[in-house]
Image (cartoon, rainbow, N blue to C red; front, side, top):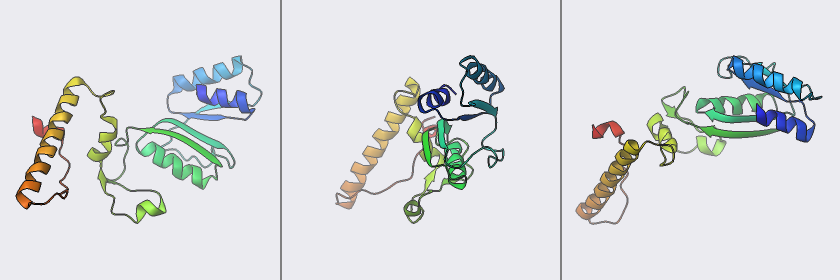
Length: 176
């Protein structure tokens, strides 16, 4: 909501913020009134994944989504295209959350023609970096990486070839 107010002030544009948390909506609207934003910047309580956004999104608006977890950013992209938003800025994270299907489906025309098939576990890897994972999870991830590298070395030796052989992802649960 802070970013919305900043954009409103910098670009003298009306901003409508959508937020599921009632308390954050109230705080954002109080701050907008306190700052006397002339652009009618408002925050509305909304469950972006479940509410009909067609009445809230307008053509030629800049659609912004921070912390657009998983399916939220996919849903917002689709809604933005349908509402003819002329600009969209997203900061997706937690790609595995709110994923409505078992495997990720690319949105682009090029992506849909590939054999790309990412499971929720594959998508979770994007958020399992050293800076966000616990020390135990980092150790487990490194152990799985070592096993995969060992398998790769073994299969190259057995097959007498220096070609990569894909293997399915392993869940960290296997280390239990």
